[in-house]
Length: 460
Ligand code: GDP
Image (cartoon, rainbow, N blue to C red):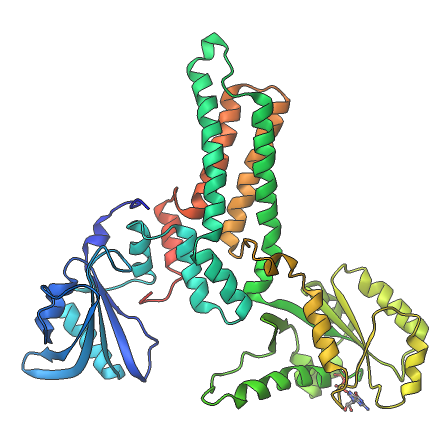
């Protein structure tokens, strides 16, 4: 891939802590830029790095004057065979906050500056290491917490999504150049670009873009989880169920030695899909229960959900009441899982609800039927798209660019139907190209880049 551009900032040599801050076995400080090797050499007593081969590691000491700061291992990557395509050094030191701070200060005193958030990745992008969508996928990869999110980010980082966009752009560029050619010969009233071929090409491209746009629903779920609401009358057993669902998972995780990570409140991961229970404050704190499940509030939170679990007590709910509630719930047009609870009390009651399809019967208190419920929740999330390994849009910026690109194509189609001049048609095509180009970074502005990379963490 060709380098995108060069700017003054990237003349600096930059450094940052690449590992998480805090105490650890080791910490890695990354340095990139034209002075990375000579600056490191000034403070490193060990092998001569300038003459050492790329992709080698070297044990030695870091010295501040006569004082030894730490024993370290230095990894050497000579540009362009490095992450940023510049000379890159990674110093693995002991994971002490004091050492890291001293080491960074030592580097700064020798002419290196601290990297801004995402600056290493930005340099890699500017030097043509990968395109913008792939750079963003790196951030997603770091933040991915579930199998599905990891898979989607990995696909994107390896270029799946970029390839698709690239193909579309190439087709459009061919098409645009024919129209532009016509404009050059406008006096002669020629048509190089066959209008009906053009039209079917736009239709085809639009179809692919539409498909990508619709994949965002799944993409969003993968990245942000499925906002799920547990609804039902007071005492139906909602908080009991929530705790059963959440605790089971916690129990599994905490059985793995060394997993002391904090749990994210009210989330569970099933088969790689993250379910985010929303507005559960009232369910967790029982003293607040009556107030928090007021009708209006319930309606409000249901609208934010992508999945509703409706829970009722099989022992105290009439068929008529259930029918009415389901009618209302279905009017939200949000996937709904209907669950009859407390079957441990008196099993004969279940018979009453035979007329209803798809009810899952459980006992939250006795943990009966929970597996079936979980399987059902997973099935409710439409993952057909994902499972087939199709390209999925997970990034809201890409999604917005795709929408704009599609709108421009729509305008082009209308222009074709109305027999409007080649000039306007060319303009629509050009806009569509620009929006597609923004996704992969063929077309960028400083604002756009600043915005994207500032969301990365420092050291990435
Ligand atoms: P919420 O108001 O919907 O959150 O309901 P709770 O989870 O607080 O449950 C209300 C009462 O029903 C509590 O006393 C629970 O112990 C009880 N309960 C919940 N699930 C079951 C169940 O499956 N069987 C029985 N017998 N009692 C249950």
